[in-house]
Image 1: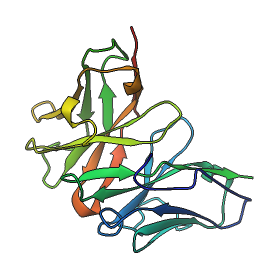
Image 2: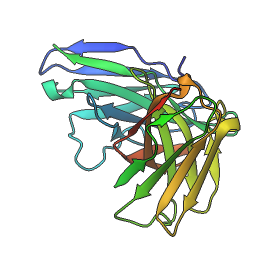
Image 3: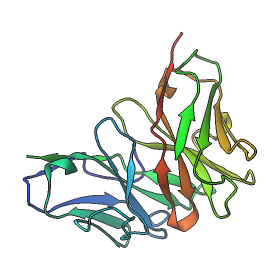
Image 4: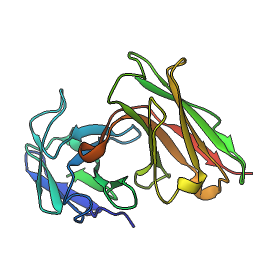
Length: 111
Length: 119
């Protein structure tokens, strides 16, 4: 059972917009920033979004992040086949002397 | 770049030891922490812990009693030791640079190394 809650799966067709939610609590998302990782099949995770809505250099602006209260969302617009991957949210949690928590991951299928 | 190394097979009850070699920059650069994350086959990501170049550590509360992390600045490496392993510790282990605190994120990541716990 992950501390951050994500839907296990999502799907959309090419060109569409899809959003993935991440729900937490006051000790993590509610008081700290959220980041998102993309994990393509058989590869290491890659940072997609940090500080709630910042994109590292090289990440297309089709990817965007937002946060409100104790929840966050990742949006992907103009969906492409190569976006098919697992997506994970993460945040710092202030409880228990502080630790990193991850969501359980969302498998995105491009139909 | 980061590269994990270590045995791919560990026996139950023994200690898993992995090293991450950092290239292209000094591990001692200020404000950097370094972390370990694992992923059991077919499952999600789990943070193991993080360590600063000065040796300050943060550990996952659920693993704290079994985890030790350290840094060797002379070799530009940091290490993970996980004791008393069981089959449940079988996973791909990733090392990564950690921007810690309230703005926590990991970037970049190593390619990962599979460690199997089996007799």
